[in-house]
Image (cartoon, rainbow, N blue to C red; front, side, top):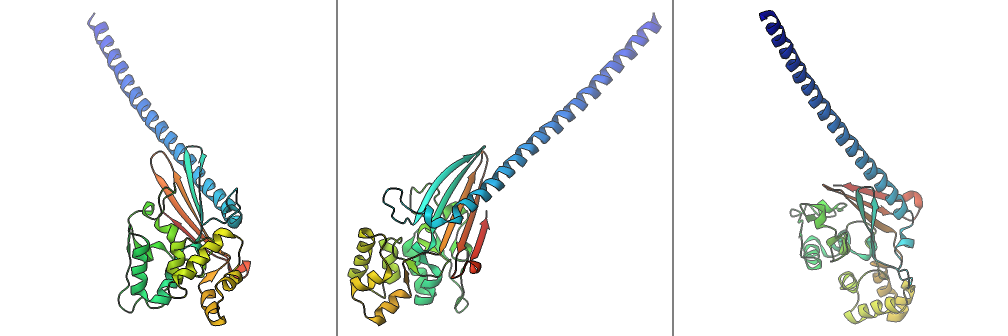
Length: 280
């Protein structure tokens, strides 16, 4: 009987040992499977992010002028907001005419860094413009937001819903610096033309764009009866067509968001086009 009891005890211990090993292996398998599922989910999300962003960039930046048009009136628009869904990601798009904005480099060249900083502060109250040390900013070209404003997160630069004016709606550091008077707001026109035209003439320019969205710069000269010298000054800061456009792509997932900014400046020749890409 003792032998049978010892043997039963040994079998019980073996069974318990096998159960422990089996539960350990099962737990490890479950953890590995969970990691694989999470990795697969992350890989799928990354794929959606990559191809969604690439496709939207190519679609919107191929012909931004045709996208930035009011559907009913046909008037040119300074910006356009759209939201699309791809899988578990929401893509918020902000397509904008960069020449409808006040250009940081143009302001600095015309007024100097100190006055340009004051103008930037007046145009927006959210962020602090970056001031260069005395003498170090002379002639320096800003080509990214971190050279213009102090900010902690890209959401401080853009409002993808378009519910309130954002910094990137009014200010730019890309393009030729000349403002498209047909898409710029009256506030931007006042800022751009303050030292070139009177307030009354600036108001006439804005009224002309409202009455005739397809008007040209030559019509502005005729309306204001400018001399050749004054017309040359206006031509140096205004234009009736845009060659620089930007696209914000904000991909919003279940746990985080990705910010992408693409800028394309088409020069005189297509081969001379400049592009910038920023990722957060």
